[in-house]
Structures are given as structure tokens and as C-alpha cells.
Amino acid sequence: MGGTEKRGLDREERGAAYHYQEKRPRLARLVSVIQAVMDGRLLLAEVQRKMEPTLRKIVREEVQIGIASMVESLKREVKHSLVCAVENTLPRVVEATLPRVVEATLPRVVEASMSEFLRNNPVPELGTPRMATSPRQEGSVERRYRLRFNKRLKTPLFTGSTVLADDDSQVVMELVDEKNHVISVGPEASAKVDIVVLEGDFRREGERWGAEEFDAAVIKERPGRRPLITGDQSLTLRNGRAVINDLSFTDNSSWIRSRKFQLGARMADDTMRALVKEAKTESFGVKDHRGELYRKHYPPSLRDDVWRLERIGKDGAFHKRLASLGVHNVEDFLRVVTRDTDWIRKELGNAMSNRMWEDVIAHAKTVILNGKFYIYWLPGMEGRGVLLDNIYQVLGFINPDNSVTPVDKVPDEEKPIQERFKEQAYADYEKIVEHDGRPLIDATTGQAMPRPINITAAGKPPDAAQSRPANAPEIVVDQRLLPMIPTPRPVSVRQSQR
Image 1: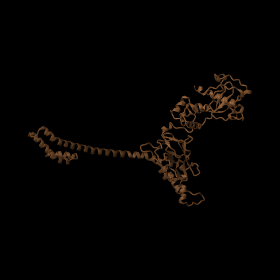
Image 2: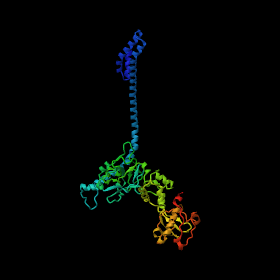
Image 3: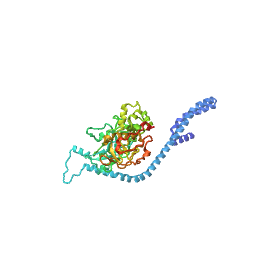
Image 4: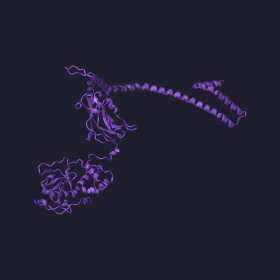
């Protein structure tokens, strides 16, 4: 009996005394099983079968009691440790951070409070009594400023590409009044501005909207995607201006109903939005960056690959054919077209229809020339040459006195010989050189020929013996008989390509 009481006392210390009463019947059954084995009434296999369930229950209950005791002890220890850590650390954290928080926050709070006070209590001009204003007038005063993007955006836009103005400069955010004068003083001129993306069809008649309407048009990224724009999403005005240095889209606009975006700008401070109207750009589409690798340029540049032109696909049949002919960029193409249009047209074959050819030429002709002068010095005719632009269009003819007769001022009797000079220049185009920048005088006006600045120096007129083609006859010039000069046999364009 004493052993039973001691066993019950141990279980109370472990917080599970109630299990004792439940186990007494099972212990009695265990004793009866053992007694039956001793009397020889049960075989060993039957003993194992009858004892296994009882032993399993006893072991499981003991393990559960031990685990429960360990969990309660661990909870008490963790709780005590956390309380001690907070009590020891919190005062030091508050003491270290509170002054910095107050120092950083207090000026903004005071400034916002003062601005709100002045808006609600404007100071009247001296000698002028303050007039009561109607709600309509109050509403017009509240939005007396507005934000604006200083220039139109360069389009089309591509994902990952920096947003720029249409002249390739950086876009500037400005705070202006109703007369479009930049506001450079006051709290609004140094406030923060948020850049957002708007629906492409967000607009109202007269471009009027409220702050709530503007916010409702703001769109976010698609689920599971990166933020729609990255970079300068928050700007700080300085004297009413802020430059957008780095802003780009991460997703295209094909998933939007209008398939277009707009960039918008709004004051970060809600109280200032009552005074400053939001800004927005024109609608534009955003394409995936991989499309930029194959897009055409409008207008193309002289150094653009020739496949940037309409109807010529990258690595397509026309591109490969032109490359085999030594035509790699737009400048090469225009020079060949100027020298011998029929030849290059024939080389591209019947696969390029007349309509396609017209599209290519029309697009190529929109290129912006660099304004440089090029000269072909006529062999054996010291000081005489043909003046061309950078795509080899003839501008005039250089005389021995360094004057230039513009192509449209050539006398009728000299036009045949000048035409021969042009043909010789085209046949011997490899000897065309860039003008060295010496003054060229218009022979008809006596004024300097208009020429671009920053011209790269080129070689002087070549020596007659070196510059004369091997198959060209020696030409002796009598100035009095200039129109009667025999025509030298030109080298064909096809031979020159070889």
C-alpha cells in the first residue's frame, strides 16, 4: 500500500496524478496474465499477444507526460528571458532613437501646420479689407498651381529603356502657375512629387479632373510581376524643378484595355494636392525590349545598319544581298543609290516590288545629313574637282581659283562637260575624300559657300600622277577650250564593286 501511495505521489509531482486511477485495472489484468503463465495455462506466443497492447499504452502515456512537462518548463524559461531582454534593452533604444526621430519629423510637422494655417487664414493686403469668398472662388484658389512635364516623351518606349524627352534630353518636372511661370519659392517649390502610371485613356474634356479621379486612374503591376516602373519614382523639387534622371518600365502595355500608358505626377503630401493639380503625359505604348532589337528608326541615321530601313529585315534576303555588295549602313545605301540607282535596284531582284522599293527610298531619304563636304579631285586637272555631300549628291564644281560653281548655276554650254566630271567621280568613287575645311567661295556671289562646323580634316588634292586611273588617258587642258574636253572612259560601277 505504501508503494502505491509513493507511485501516486510521483505522478502528482509530474502533473498527471489522474492517470493513476485509470491504470489500476490494467495493472490487475497484467498481474493476471503473469499468473496464468506461471500456472502453465498460457503459451509464450499468447503471452506476447496479450501483453503488447497494454505495454504500448503504458509507454505512450509516460512519454506524453514527460513531453508536456518539458514544454511547460521551456515556456516559462522563454517568457522570463524575453521579459528580461525587453526591460534591459527598451530604455536604451528609446533614448538613442527618439531625439533623431523628433529632429527629422518636427520641421515637416511645423511646416505642414503653418501651411495649413496660412491657407485657412490668408493675410490680406495692406489697406485692403479681406473680402468674403464664395465656395466656387475658394475652389479656384485651392488648385492655383499645377505640375507639368516640360517636354513630350520620346516614343516608342521599350521595357528597360530610360524614359527621355523627344529631343533625347532628360525630362524635367516643373511646378507652374496659371500663366505657366515656374514657381521657385514657397513650400510647394521644394516639396516631394510621386511619379505614377496612368491608364492610357484617362482624360476629361478640357483636361479637368479631381484628385480622386486621378488616383482612380493609377494602375499597378500585374500580379506576380515587378513594379511597373523603376528608378526615380519619387522626386524632390528644387526651386520648382526636378530632373527625371532614371525611369524605365518593366512591363509592356499590351495587357491594358487601351494598350497604352500615361505617366502621371502628383504631390506626395495630400495637403498640398489641394493646391497643386497633377500632371500627365500624352498616351504612349510600351513594347518589350526584345522588339527594340529589330525596330526601325524614324528618321534613320547615316550610321544605322541598313536593315533599320523599311522593307529590309534583319538577316533577311535583302539584308544579306546588300551586305554581299558592301552596303552595310544607311550611308552606304544612299551613296550607291546616288551613284547608280538602276544597278542596285536590279541587284535586289524581283523579290523587291516597286512599291517596296519606293518605301525603302522614301524612308532612307528622311535621314538627317551630317552636313560634311566631300571632294573628288579630277586627275590631271590641278585644282579642279567635284563638290559633293556625304551621300555623294553633287553640290557644285570646284574651279582652279578655289571658287565653286553651284550645280544649279552652271552655264548651259558647260553642263555637258560638268556631267562628264560627275560621271567620272561616280566611276572612281573610292577616291572621293572629305573636304579639309579650307574656305570655298561661291563663284556666282563671291560669298563663302555655306558649310557645317566641326568638319574633320581630310587629305589635300592628290598628285596628278597618283590620282589618275590607270586606264584613263592623259588630259591636257586649255582653259579656252574647256567645253571641248574629251570624255574619259569611266569605270563601271559593277567593275568598281569588284
